[in-house]
Structures are given as structure tokens and as C-alpha cells.
Amino acid sequence: MFEIFSNIVSIFLILLIGVYGNKKRIITEETQKGLIEILLNITLPLMIVSSFSFSFHESIMNNIIKAFIYSFICFIIAIPLCHMLFKKVKSEGKRRVLQFSSVFSNCGFIGFPIVNMVFGSEGVIYASIFNLFFTIFLWTYGVILYSDSKEKNDIKRILLNPSMIAVYIGLPILIFNINIPQIILYPTNMVGSMTTPISMIVIGGVLSKVDFRKMLKDGSIYYGALVKLALLPLTVLILGSILKDNTIVVKTLVLVQAMPVATTTTIFAEKFNMEKEYSAIIVLVTTLISLLTLPFWISYLV
Image (cartoon, rainbow, N blue to C red; front, top):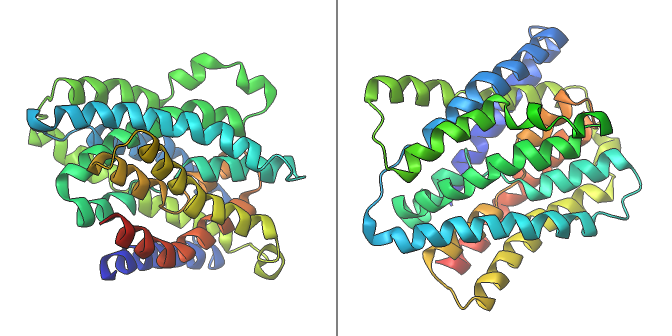
């Protein structure tokens, strides 16, 4: 519980730095856009590459194959399910943000440390495989969801963006269990680790302009939190029950699906100029509520 609390408090402290920077006009609109470009084109791709660099023993190969199959199924189920659940939301922009925020969880900065705490290094391996599919669907389905009709047809732009190229680099590293030299891995990890702080500073900047009284009266935010923090992990749990599989693989996937909304929800909203304030509130609210829901899921799974 202390580690969960520490991770989430750390996120809020960085977020407050973003709020302060914007209020003091240290971070301008142009700076904000620059940070997003750095995030999407440099730090996030390097974080993706570094997430593929882990060693595993052949004894868990069967579970690794399961993690690949189950992770793919998780997204294949979550996408149409969220489309159906948010169909009645009147605002198209909010509907798209809710779909995106429910499908994509904060499986990296919050997820990895908590999975490591609960299931150890083996759980982190399965969470990393889930993160592989997270990245693929983020830069295909996620981009299409936030884009207009003209951009939807730009398949080349989607498949050749820096994060997808990072996946193409990372897959052989994972499949062939390649050990990257430390002289390359260290700077890759170090720059990649900047992704979350930059994300939270950007979100803090968006939140500095939010009318909280108005936003927090919107019931769709809490409905979205219910879907993200309760319904989707429950769906994975039911899937495991149907498959009669209660292994650490299923438990890890339940836990990563129970994480709050991914910070990329707001980064994409800022990038594509779609419901920026609304998306930032969803990140904030789900992260706060997860202080209550995550201990429940952990106690149930362990």
C-alpha cells in the first residue's frame, strides 16, 4: 500500500510542477508543444525500446506465449466493449477520449513497479509483453481514434512513426533474447525514463487552465473511471475463468488493466487538439480513485 501511495504521490508532485510552470509562464504554449514533440519523437520511443530489454528463462516460455496471446485478446475485447459502453455519450470528442482512456492504462510508470512488488520480476516480463501490444494498438487504433477522417487513411504515417519503429527494433531484441551492451542500454533507459515526468508536466499545464467546478460535475468522468478501474480488469478475470487459467499471467494482466488512465490520453488530446481539459481531468480522477481500487485488486489476486 505504501509503494502504491508513493508512486501516485510522485505523479501528483510532478503534475504540480507543470501547474506551477504554466501559472508562472515559465512553460508557454510553444514550450508545451515542444515538450510534446520531444515526448512523442524521442523519450517515448526510447522507453519502448528499453522495455523490450529483459532476460527470461526457458522454463517460463509457455507462460510467455500465453502472455502474448492473452494480451492481444485483452485489446481485441476492450476496443469493441468500450465502443459499445460509451456509445450514448453525446459529445463525439468526449466519447473518443473515454474510449481511448478506458482501453489504455498506465501500465508503465505506475504499473511496472506495482507488478514487480506483487509478482516479482516474472510478472514484469508479462507486463512488458502487454506493453508491447499497448504500444502497437496505441499507435494504430489510438491515433485513428483521435484523428480526423483524412488522417485515418494515412497508414504509412501511422506505421512509420517513431514509436512503431521502436517496436520494430524491440521485437527482435525480445524474441531472440538479445543482450544490449550497457553503453547503449544505459542512455536509452535514462532518456526513456524522462517520458513520465514530461507527460505529467504537460498534463499539469493543461490542468492549470481547467475549471474544476464545472468539469467535476460531468458524470461521464466517473462512468469512465468505473469502466477503467473495475469493469475492464473484471473482464480479464472472467476471461481467465472461462479459459480455466489462474496463472500469474492472468493475474498480471488483471492488475495492469486495473491501473489508472494512461498519461498519453492527454498527450494525444493536446497533440490532436481534442478535449484537452476533459482528458486531463480523467487522468487525475482515475489516478486518485486507484488509491482505493488497486489495494482491493491486489488483495484479491494475491
